[in-house]
Length: 172
Image (cartoon, rainbow, N blue to C red; front, side):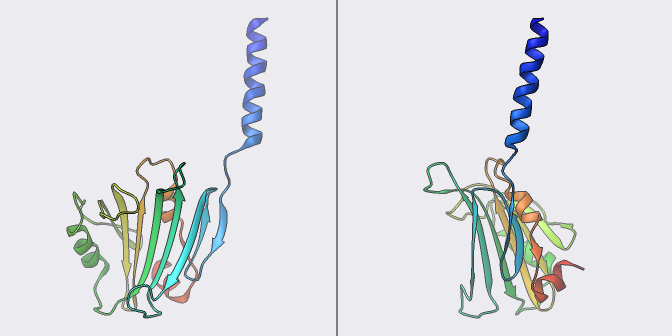
């Protein structure tokens, strides 16, 4: 009889957890991408962030840590004019060379991907960098999630292109 009660209790607890569910992602649209952001994540975009050229685009997605003072994880996406007509593999290699302990870039879909330490001050630690390029633009997506528990990799991999220039490059 005790085994039966324990089984019923276990099934009841399991049912409660299933009803609670996991935090669902909410689709958010930005001018260059659509992304499914899990609960606790937010995003902001800006054009002309470096030189004032409106063709420069930056999307920063982040999740704050429990203190609310710093980011626990971040995904940054940049769409830049390809002024020097550089190939994605070459650009990824140049970026990897500037990072600590970077892996060799490897081809994965439309991207050249590597891991390393981008040395930014927002989220410390290793990150994954994705680079894609055509004659018109370069797309760089950097994800950092030191604990691996915040879903940054899934968010970066799930960015959906919506503008003509991002669709042309990423939906080949």
